[in-house]
Amino acid sequence: IEAGYANAMPVHPFVGTADSRALYRATIFTTALDMNGMVLHRGKVETGFLTGIEVDVYGNLNLTVAPSWESPEKRVSGGGGANDIASMTDRILIIMKHERRRFPEKVSHITAPGHIDGPDGRRKAGLRGKGPELVFSDLAVLGFDDENKRMTLVSLHPGVTLEEVIDKTQFELIIPERVPITEPPTREEQDLIREVIDSSGFYTAWKEPKLVWWGKD
Image 1: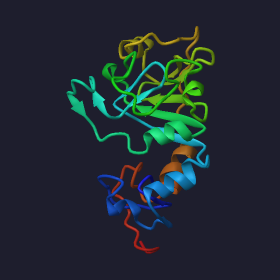
Image 2: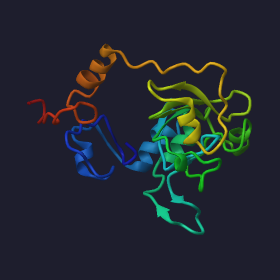
Image 3: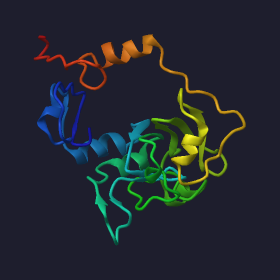
Image 4: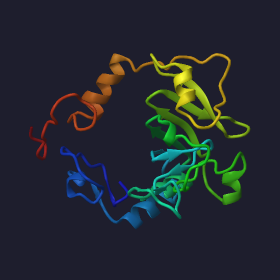
């Protein structure tokens, strides 16, 4: 976590990365500057997961202010380490709630750069990595065209119509002739996530978190 610790196993919800509940049983305690420098900026992070209040046609993310810096109506918590992650990781996976206001043609403010303004945008800015690869919304999976880096439709989630996705996106998506349905996770994959990776039930299980005190239930 950008605040300077890793391998934590939190069992209670926390309000931010500086909340001490977030670092329960962490194996590394250092500073945010050290964590970014010794891990992220050395190229040790392969995949970055990001979100925001807006994502545009080139995968640029806004986590700062809307509708504009000059006339702000909404201010959010800010980028934190998002710009570093977007600039330094090999690839970026974006998670968004699919609403029309969150998918504008151009974000109000670029907090975390995607492909910036097209296929050569990241190279001209001197950024590392391939940039955004996929966007996972609650309606669809989206990607980016290899040539022009504009957002494309990869698949629709079960029960979602193409018209619904188009209506909730302000820009014109690149849509293939045949749009497949997103393959749901298997029961084995769900069990792996809920029972092994997140065995405390803190993030994913439909149950009260199981409290773990230094190895004892």
